[in-house]
Structure formats: C-alpha cells, structure tokens
Amino acid sequence: MKNGNFFLKIKFVDISARVATGVVLINQKDCEKYGIKPGSNLAMHIKSQTITVHVDITDTLIKEGEVGIFKDLGTRYQIKKGETIEFSLTGIGKPKSLEAIQKNMLGHDLSYEEMKSIVSDIVSRKLNDVLIAFFVSSSFLGQFTPKELFYLTKAMVETGKRISFPGIVVDKHSIGGLCGNETTPVIVPIVASFGVYMPKTCSRAVTSASGTADTFEVLAPVSFTDEELKKIVMKTKGCIIWGTGDITPSDAIILDVASQLLIESFPKMVASIIAKKVALGVKYLVIDIPVNKSAKIKNIADGKKLEKVFLDVTRQFGIKTIVSLNTVTGPIGRGIGAALQIRDDLKVLEQQPDRPMDLEKRAVELSGIILEMSGAVDKGKGRKAALETLTSGRALMKMKAIIAAQGGNPEITSKDIKLGKKRYEVKSNISGTIKAIDSINLSEISRILGSPFIKSAGIYFEKKMGDKVNKGDILCSFYSTTDFRIELALKTLKEKPIFEFN
Image (tube, rainbow, N blue to C red; front, side, top):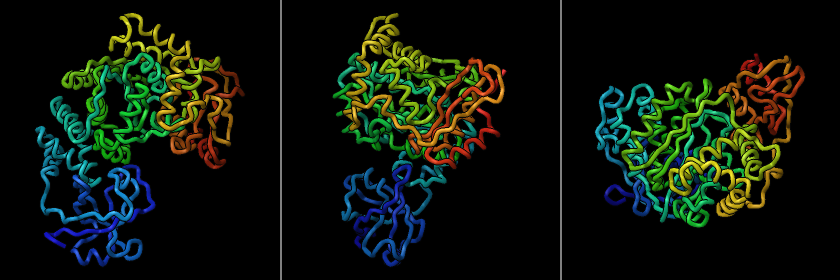
C-alpha cells in the first residue's frame, strides 16, 4: 500500500443489476488491513477513469487479494476477469454536490457549477441512491427554473460522450404514459429509408407494460457501446437501441432511482430526453405528447405547459422542434406487452390485412412531420411520402437491415413472434359500447402477467374504444407463461377494470 493506494484482483460475481452498480465485495481481512468499514467509499482507478464504489464485506465469497464486482460494472468499464485494479480511500468531508442538493431541497436556485457537481458525482458514484433519491424528489416536489433545467440538461451532456454523423440527424420521442402507442419501430425505418440519420435511443419500462427498448429486444439486441451504435447507424441510417453507458451516463442511474420511487419528475424527464438528443447531434426533433385522462398528461392545458418547456430547452441547444399534442381515446394498437407490441409493428410494416390502422395512421403522421421539417421531402408531402414507403415495402426492407445490423434475424415475420403459452379470453358480462379504457389499470395487469420482463406476456385487444359489445363477446386475451399469473391478473381485473361501458 503506497500513498493510501492498494491493488486487488477482479473476480466477477454472478449478479446482474438494473444499472451497472457501484457496489464491490472485499474480504474481511483485506478490509482490516486497509482500514475499510462496511459502507465505506473507495476510489476505483480504471484506465484513465476514477469512479467511486461502495464496499460490502464478506468472509467467504471473496478471497484475500480479490475484489468482487457485478458483471454489469465490468461490462460498463470493460474490466477483464483477473485484472488487477488500483483502489484508494476517498477523502472525508461533505462533497459540494451534497451541499447543492440540500440547497435545491430548500428551494434555492442552483448555478451551473452546482448542477454539474451533482451530475458528475452521480456518474462517478460519489452519491449513493439515497442522496440521488433526494435530488429526484426535490424536483418533483418543487420546480426547476428554466435556467436550472437548461443547466441540468447541459451537465448531463457534458458528463458523457457525444457522437456526430455526416448528415441530417433527426429524432422523435414520445413522453409515454399510454399503453401500446409503439410507433417508433415503424417510424425509424420509414425515415431512414430517405437517407436521413435517425439514431433512436429508447427507454425501458418504468411502470408501463413495455418500453420501446423492451419491445425491440424481441427482434434484436438493444445494448451497444457508442462505437457500435455509430457503426450500425452509418450502415443503415437508423437504429433502435436502449442506449450506451457513455452517452448521458447519469440518465440510467437517475432513472433507476426514480423507478423505485414510482414518481415521474417532469424536469428530469425533459432533461433526460433532450440531453440524449444533444449528445447524438439531433437537429430536428418531434415530441409526441399523447393526452388522455389515464396517461401522463391528463389534459391539453398541461400538454401546452410541457410543450413550452420542450421548446424553450431545445431552442437553447439549436434543435428545431415540433411538439405534437394528440388527444387519444385509449391505447394505440391492439397489443400490450413486448411481443404483442412488436407483432403489431411488423404487421404494419408487412401491410397485413389485420394490422392496427390507428397505429399505422399515427406512425405515418409523425414520420411525415419529420420528413418535412428535415427537408427530406417538400412541405405538404410528408404524410404521402411516408405512406408510400410503407405500401411499397421500402420501410420493411429497411427494418430488416436494422434488425440484421443489431444482431437479430432479418427474416423474422409477425407470424414468428411467440406469445405466452397460457392464454385466457376475457369475455364481457354485459352488452354496451366501450366508452373508456384505463391505461393505468391496463399497465398494472400487464405487469402482473409478466410484462415487460416476460417478453411473451401481455394483453391483446379484440375490442377497442367505441366498439359495440354483446354479452359473452371476447374483449381481450391475456397471455402469460403460468396459470398463476393469469389467475392473479383476473383477480386484479375484478378490482381494477380495464373497460368502461356506456
């Protein structure tokens, strides 16, 4: 041990975490030797980087001279098994980032330096999940000023890597909260068919049935390094991925904490969305805001407020943005859950007779906006151009190229998508007309069936908004892998109905 530094040999612990965790396991005798206590922080020096890790102590799982790390952390920092890593004790004292979080909680405005200190310490793991939770909840309980929101977004960009492409870069983002609405796997191949770069980074589900990353993972891998991302996009003009650890790395950590709190912080959401677009060089952006009483945005007035926030932040980064406020009556598409949603998308791309037309209509509408604002087609011709790309099969061919580039099977079709072996038909016990579908209850029941972690689980609608129903008609089908999950979903359905009738 020299100048407080010591070396330990890497041993991978067969545990995967939702986010590359900063917890390490060290043998009790090594801890006694170096003066380390449970919960202590250590600086872990990896190549040219230094990250903060938290120590748990063991007598048997890790030998003397070793350090146990989760596989996620090894993948994130490209650490090899058996590699010797240098550690050092971290300084004692209250970090500036903690002072900034306390200031934020008291309702005081933060400077850029204070905001960046928080984000930097989140990335380097100097702040644990408890402190991050206070930062997340402070913006939920209070309100960032427009300047603070810009500072947060800028800090998220500058604590990660940026990627540039030699052409027009566009993107679309839906703020979510509406079940189904899986337009991205249709939009990306349409837009990319026009030679426009669309490096689409997507989220995983927090409380919904399936995020876009969860959905596309049915067809191909979605986790890549920034170098792999660029290679895919340079080859196909588009991608649909979860993201990379080096692009806005603070985002995944903040999202993980927020998902445990089960709260949606709109300032954090805006910063997260826009930071990724800035990091990828996006110059033209469409924001899709579905409005529904059971979605994230309940009414047009709230949607207008959020629209103003998006326009203000993107303007400061030089991104031309159009916000599409869309009042919806219920889920878009018929499938809810990863496999069922991607099956809907493939049906649209394949132009199958039973494809969900509401999904096709919305995807074509948003694609048309992107094509026009980027100059790929003339004004007023975007929707027609997007639709022709679908009907001609060009979008399907582009989708196959993207699937292949991401390591999937490009020949997969909608008929090949495997659904849960256990199926239950939910029938109506009354006659009437469906006047509402509750997205909140729908998401909860889908998750009970296993979504999004069981890809084949979910719900398929036989009837939708406005349909007339006779007693005994099939309303929807539940899919899962076990009878227990089906039974639990049916029990929940009695307490939290999905359908409301006139």
